[in-house]
Each structure stands twice: as C-alpha cells, then as structure tokens.
Length: 473
Image 1 (cartoon, rainbow, N blue to C red):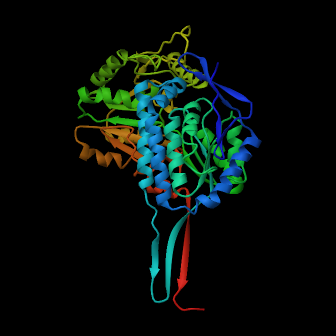
Image 2: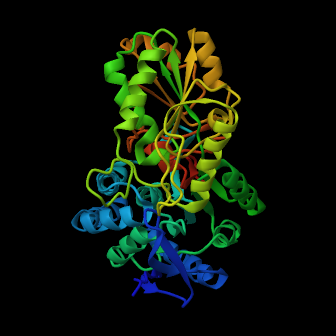
Image 3: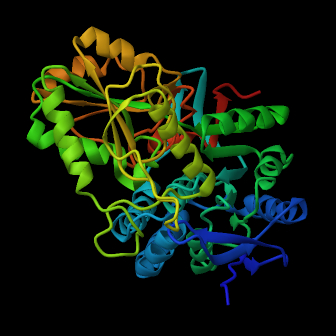
C-alpha cells in the first residue's frame, strides 16, 4: 500500500481525502501520496498562521532560538530516514541527499544566531529616536524540487526567527521528506506558527494571491517568478524571489588543469546539474582549452549515472518528466545544429527513469540554445576565449546574474575580474559555497531581494522608527 503523508495545519496532521501521486524519478514508480489542497485548505492554514502571529510575534528571540535548537536535533536524529526519502523522491545519490539533510541541521543551528538589533538614530537634547525591526506578518513560502528540504529550512528559519508565521508549499514533485519533517516537528512550535500544505499547480497562484498573506518568498524559475511578482503586486505583498541563473565559469590561462578539471565537472554536474548556481557556461582560455576540455570529457565518461539509491551512483536522474523532456530537447537541438559533442549526447529511452547521460559540448556558438538558456540538467557547454575583456563581456551578456566563478593559480589577481561580473556571488577557485551569515541575492532577472545573512532576515521585517521628544507636551 502506498504511504500517504499528511499536511501540518494549526499543529495537527490532516488531509482532505484528495491525493497527488509522487513518483521516484529513477524508477517512475509511485512511492507516496500527498494531499491535493485547494482554496478551503489554504484558508484554514492562513487563518491558523494569522491567529498564531498575534502571540508568536511577542515571543523573545531567545525563546525562538530554543525551539530551533530542538528542531535541529529532531532533524539530526532522523537524518538517515530523511536522506533515504529525499533520494527516493528527488533522485540525487545518497551521499548528496545526506549532505542536504546535514545542511538543514547546520542552517537550523546557524541562522538563528543572526541578530537584528535596534539602532539609535538620534540621541540629542531635543529627542531620542530609535529604529527597530518588526515582523511583516504571515509569510507564504514556495519551495522548488531540486533542494526541497534545504530550501524549506532556508525560508522557515528566518521567517519564524523574525517573528513571522508561515504557510509553506513544497513542490508537488518532491513533498515527501518535507511532510515527514513536518510530522517530526509538529510539536516543536506552537500551533499555527508553521503550516505546511501540498497541492498541484493551482495552489501556488492561490497562495500568492491570498489577501491575508503579507509576504511571499519564492525559489524557482524566472518565468514563474515574474508571475509571482505580478500576483503579489495586487495588494503590494512583500516578495523575495530567488530565481534562475546561467552562471559563467571563467578558466584563466594560468589554471592548473590537473586540479581544475574535476572541480569544474562537479561545479556543473552536482545534483545532475539541477542547481540554480551550477556552472552552466564554461569559458576556457584558448591556451589550455584542448587540454582541459579533454580532461573534463575523460572524467565525464568515468562517472556512473543511475539510481541514487544504488552504491557507486554519482549522478542521478532528472527529477521530473517535464524537465527531462526539456533537457533532451536542448541536446537534440545541439545535434540538429551540428555542434560537436565531447561526451554523451545519446540516451536510451527503453530504460526506466528520467536519465540523461553526462553530456559535454565542444565550443558551441554563443547564441546556441544550450549556451543561452539555463539547461538545469547534466549538460556542459565548453567555449574558448582569448582575452579577459572579451570573456567578461560574454559572461555578462545574459539576462541572468545569479553567480559565477573564476579558476586561476593567482586568486588575488582574479578579484579584479570578479568585480566586473554582473552577478550576486562570485567564487574564486570554488563553486556553490553558501554561508548562513552571507547574503545570497541575484542581479538582473535572477532575483529580487536576498536570502541568508542579515539581509535575508531583514526581508521578513519592516523598519519602525520611534521618536521621543525630550520636552514634554
């Protein structure tokens, strides 16, 4: 019998008798069911969050931190179960799923240490003026399918720490581990402070348009982010949007090929390339292009693609069928255009699961779809460049501006290049590192607002200025 997972509304585990199937992308078999919620279910969750907000906003930061410590311990205690469930629904190998759950523990411990202290803006003979931060209210959170549990934690913790309450919607493709987490922490927070509900494509627009939600925090595609922003604008909801990226990696001519090849590979192919901050355009200086492209291709051919639950698997399947079809379409377009493949490019449709072979392309043109569009799959286009000014111009010629990386034997000199990239984050000689105390924010069409760090915490608050005249009325 298929396991049915329940929603968390007002501290209780509930369902409405309507169900959505959840599929293992490695086997295409149904592995669980979750409630298919509509307006009535959403109204209950929002009402619970609204009622809880009146009390929760008055709790101290110390009280909230104590509850997050309990939550972190619950996640750690049940990490193996959550890891296996995450692999089953998302597809990523056990090692990567384990890293995600460990990241949840770390974030749940670290983010509550952030502070939003009051600031004295004037202390004179005439007046005392101070600025404090107050919670926005009820937050609606929408989580993607690539890092479903970690992205949920990165929204839940700062929202609740600020004094807000939350209604969180996981992706219908990957809701199981999040609902299991909801079950495990149901008794940690007061009823209504954290509500987690599931539903199909119709639930997201209902959430963003709900009149009693004060803020939306969304992680997903730029196209969907624009619709979220439009919907939220109707009643001027506050928004945080963490959107798509087409991140450029720049390999300078002094880079050590023996050290860089494997690192670049995983900068692109971690989680089967389904990472918003993965390196999706690799620019390699012409002096080392042949050597490095050959080393990357050789490494690619040795990596095992398969079911994430099987020992030795390094890259799992694409998480869902629509994205699987889109990645295959991009690869087919590259074939039709006659671009050269250094690895991959062919797939066997007779094999169950949404598997795409590790694919590396040799110097496709800048206007190729495989370069200009975010692939979000195990596909890596390698391109040659000649000069620093040229590659900076090519890297910046994108509507996206999420992150980027530079690879070199002289990291101090690379800072000057990094400062010219139009992205929110630039790594030198590493990739995909995010810290709880540093903001993560996209430029251009890669986002609106920030997550993580003090800047991310501020997103869930309003400033309030209280001024006292020294002379009594």
